[in-house]
Amino acid sequence: MQEGILAPVARLDRWLDAVLIALLVTCSVRYVQRHGLDATALLVLGGAAVLGAAYLTRRLVADRPPWPTVWVAVVVVLWVTLTLLAPSFAWTAVPVAFAVLQVLPFPYAVSVVVVMTAVVSVAWSRIADDLDPTVFVGPIGIALVTVLSYRALEREARTRQALLDELTDAQADLAAAQRRSGALAERTRLSREIHDSVGQGLSSINLLLNAAEQDWDRRPEAAREHVAAAGVTAREGLDEVRRVVRDLAPAGLDAGDSGDTAPEALPDTLRRVAESAAHGVAVQVRVHGDPVAVPSSVASALVRSTRGALANVVEHAGARSAVVSLTYHPDEVLLDVRDDGHGFDPALAGPRGERGRGLHGIRHRAAELGGSADVESRAGEGTTVSVRFPLADDGSRGGRGV
Image (tube, rainbow, N blue to C red; front, side, top):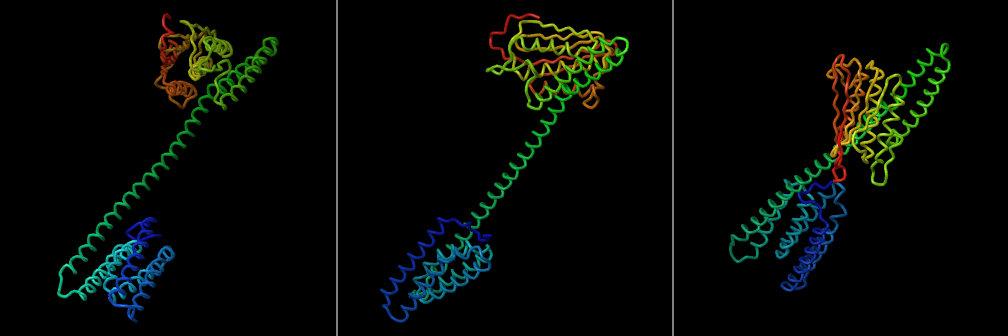
């Protein structure tokens, strides 16, 4: 793992290589022009070649500890020796220092750069005629500013990387939460739809079979009718299970190309539901206003809410009759299921009890589609379940009364 205070940047590495080679060639030419091609010049030229070759091996050992540290030591020793022999090679300190900053951690990099700065000052002072303070102050100031600048850049880069890591972790957590939320929503949907379809169908079958058992000896024809009705309910329940699993609308509510059901589809389906779910309760279906096409999701919710409300009437209310009212307003569609049963306290119907689960499902289903559901009841005065959904007012639904 890279530990230097400069992140590895391929373009910077290439420029450092090119700058070092250019400086080595220039300084070598200058040395030969000034001193001629003697034994010392051959030593200097050989040192320059070895320094260049060693420098270019940096990327080969960058990820192989402890070779990066060995590489720094070799390159710095070669540079110090070459600079002390030929002070003009002090210019190569810039790319060498950058490489050191890339390889070593900050405290060690600073120490090496300080040593290199001191070598530059000593080398230039050897060729100066008198003591020049700029030879010492200039390199030290440049080195100090360079190291501190890149230290600040390194800290900013790490802070930015930490923020990116936190953002990535947050996105992963959000995705996981969305998956959990989606799974929970799907479980809730299946639980609600199974309660209002399969559960109510099984309850109806149980009531029909109990009635058949009571009439088996005294009224065999009636018993056979009950059994036949139970068979029809079982087949419808099986079809409904398949539709719930596929998240389709109840039978009879197939949507057209616009995504809306036919205007008469919803009232006709409610009449069939009322007829199949009555089980000894006189159920009337009343339609107020002119039927219009409604979204298939809203129609499905109204049908399943009706089925759930009627199941509560049959199983819990002790009612003799019930009325299902479907009212079309210009801006909404309203469903009321009223019974003359013994009533109950709505505040005691939570999401846990059998009745409470059905009412809770009706409320939750309505809220999911932007509608609302209310329950009005009092002991001895029956119960009214109201479900309403907004309709888009496109100007063609006005003029309907209740």
